[in-house]
Length: 192
Ligand code: C5P
Ligand code: MG
Image (tube, rainbow, N blue to C red; front, side, top):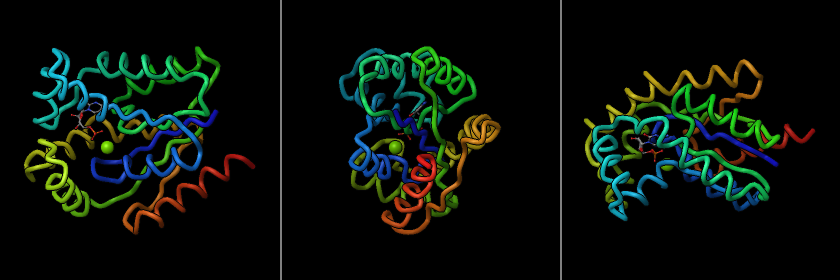
């Protein structure tokens, strides 16, 4: 199995790169953001609660996203592997993910952080918001809250995988294909 965490601030290009990686390596794409947006669209109790937090740029409680991921991982244990996109977002989530995978005899192989400056992510997210209508992509204020949340609660998760020599930075400000090439180079190094 090949298990990848795609990391980086909102708007770094995690979802875009995940789509290309699933095509190339036949992996299962697990985006907690997408799973939450499905709950919102279905107007489930979970979705209604999550929307309040998402629209403020805050995080949904750890237990909620961990259980969503657990459910999806269990469904796809016979796959080639997973791309975790937008998860883990806290140290607790990372610890639980590692435990969950270890119980199945698997592990995170690599965490790739897409490096993109704040001004660029703000521009990208506003543009995405015009096309997708995502409510948390509409205002600079909400986007800045999401960046704050990332810096306060999420960025530190890198340290966990750096400590295990599983973390790589990838320049994420070029074209989609350039970024993809950098990611593929890092993945191919794992196979040697
Ligand atoms: O990953 P994405 O940017 O699509 O997530 C959108 C929003 O969903 C985040 O800004 C956050 O409010 C919420 N989320 C969360 N916990 C996660 C993933 C997403 O709270 N693990
Ligand atoms: Mg995304």
